[in-house]
Image (cartoon, rainbow, N blue to C red):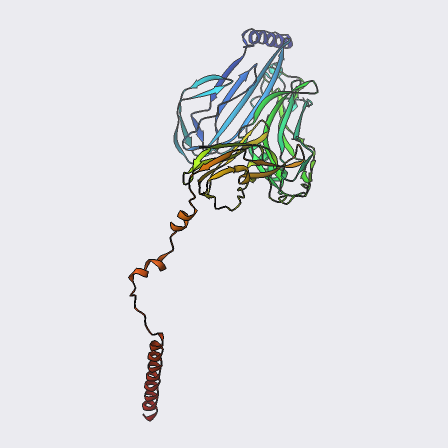
Length: 482
């Protein structure tokens, strides 16, 4: 009789929840409790039902509290043939001291939708002493009706359809050539295991220490929060959780080794005989491991500038203030290197010495962009110059830059294509006359224009020395006599 009543009660409640559940898409933001202890975290949780969390503007700052990692979870339910999915992302905040803090009202953009969240006062009290939880169903006379006692629950392991991978877009590169690396967890849309991230920030810190190669220049894409996107691999759909992305540029020809690393996840075991009020799952852990990988590095071909050149695919963008000039008339010229590669490795231009121009040290501007799995940007040199001689000048004879292109596997040179025509008189002599000869020549006009005998000063020196010797001898005589 108790069994039929339990079945009837469960069936009725399931029908009620099915009729009222939100099978449509919904987005909510849940703010944590207003009173916490010093050893508890204050949380803000974004919950997306029946949709993917595609983009998020970021969680607010709280004065007096610091952000301490995020956690996310995804669950899928099958009820009466209908599928309901829930994805949540939680930002944890930790207080450094006791007191009262204010969470101001804020707006957070989730999947292009602005959600207004009211402010809240947070009271942080003294740390709580952890207590052992008491089983609420111990000695419960209704345990047979609402589920077995927890100690007698049986749980089964559900296989996770997921993997952890370190992805590299090139297996062989030249010295100085960049290759993209990403670290992500891939969870199949057909996955039935209930999983959550576990202490992700600490784990990533240890993982990155192991996989970052010491013989490479790193351009980090700064993935601050785990990014989720849907991808297809071999006709199978996955949710990709990107945790780290960077482009590495080898500094020498040593092979680059990436060891196998593991990511520990919370993975729940499911109850074999779920009851309405009994626990439906049991917390467990599973570690997913990446495969070790190696990137081979080739030496650059022989070239006089082999040790100095940058490696990449670059173009020249140049600009000049005018091409018809007069001697003594200043002009500005900008030599801008733009493209894909290690922008940080671009050095200065080696200009030939010339007296036909007065060239001043350049203004340098550098821009680095990290997006779509590659590093690009520009490095520009802004020159200010004054021509001293008339004539026609090809600026390519003065401004050029050599690099190695890994696509063509050749050294290439970017040269100016601008010619200038200078008219007027030579300014070389004016430049010489205008040169400051220094303080020595400035005092010439202050000296007497009278010839003197140099030898008379030598005689004076001799008499002075003799006088000093006589005085020293007399002094010594009186001292010994006493």
